[in-house]
Amino acid sequence: MEIQKPYLLFLGDVPDQLAAKTAHGIVDWRPEWCVGQLRLPGCQADCGLTDLDIAQAKAKGARTLIVGVANAGGVLPEHWVSKLVEALDAGMDVATGLHKRLASFPAIAEAAARNGRKLHDVRIPDMDFATGKGTKRQGLRLLTVGTDCSVGKKYTALALEKAMRERGLKADFRATGQTGIFISGRGVAIDAVVSDFVAGAAEWLSPANDADHWDLVEGQGSLFHPSFAGVTLGLLHGAQPDAFIVCHEPTRTKMRGVQHALPSIQAVIDRTVLEGQLTNPAIQCTGLAINTEHLSESDALALLERTGREYGLPCVDPIRTGVDPLVDELVRRYPAKG
Image 1 (cartoon, helix red, strand yellow):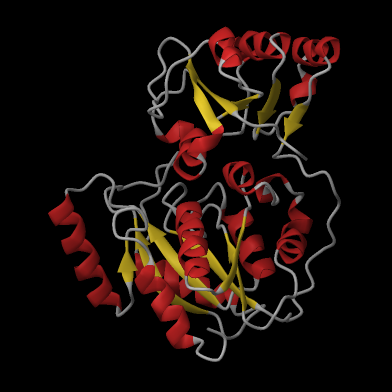
Image 2 (image 1 turned 90 degrees about the vertical axis):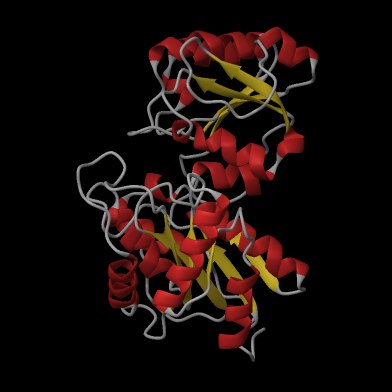
């Protein structure tokens, strides 16, 4: 799959910033690929890009309209269809990470056909996977896990890749969601894989490698989330991580989209070790990544220091403080590999 750049990011009329996390992720990690954003009336998200209509974006060179949203169920609202058709008629391709195929909408399929444009459904795997085998394979793997959905698992893995490569370490980000695929250009949308094959897909995504090579696997969901724990568990078993980082958002009281309370960081550590030992008995937690976006600088730094001391682990905010302490810990724990 080759998605043509640059992008126009479509935010629709989503109700909050988090609902546009796909667009935000692309802007944060690949700003040079973005010409602007397209928002419908009532949209409550803003990526900080220039607001453009289809014609203006085309004039600025946009080649693909990216549907930059994530929502429960991965659905495309019917009232967005006309804008996607307008983009296709203007000569753009359209890409989405939602669950429903773009071509399943007759108006979109017809517009793509008459204009000779491509439709990219990055969330829908284009290959078959085997079932997971749980056999130990060479190389090192790290998985980001969370107390909830949308707490920074992808950002932590991407920040680790950048920092580790800057030190000359062998490290690759392995995308398991739509945004990560748009950012990295490769990966598997693990939540769209048939349940029996999730672990096998994770094994395929992080194959045997050099003994000193790190696969940094983007986590999904949470072992404690009643909607997504199954995906999380399959990814944990297939990724077979040697190390994991717990990601957490400290201002939440309930898990996203449900009424369940957030688990503690310690509960996540304990359960991840318990479940992860099935395919890697040596699994261990090597650090914490706290999303302090909603805290002041002083409160954030105090929380990071206090939490790190409480758990005896390096504790960072990948955006606010960087991830060097997490890399230091990996090198310390795996000296022969670092």
